[in-house]
Image (cartoon, rainbow, N blue to C red):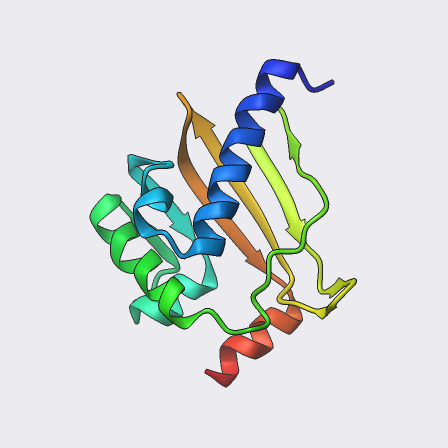
Length: 135
């Protein structure tokens, strides 16, 4: 069972992260991450031109998130239906099929510690990966 205190912290992170993403607000995004935080995603390898799909540390996150905001395709929308949390890990899905058509299907997992994101993993579905290959 989810405890209300956990849910409110998770809701805060989800709300602020979604707002920062929607507004392409780099500083608001970075403020949610711990100094040594990491993001793991196929997009890291693609945008950072590195063999690994992991970016770590605020300076590297700044470069990566800037590139994300500059290159978001129109299929990268933000429709989701809630999230799951145990107070330490938050998980949600952006499904491919939405009320307004298709979007990139992703699953996001954030590990939270002391109110900050420590580890952020993004798993891509087949439709999202096909869009990545086109660019």
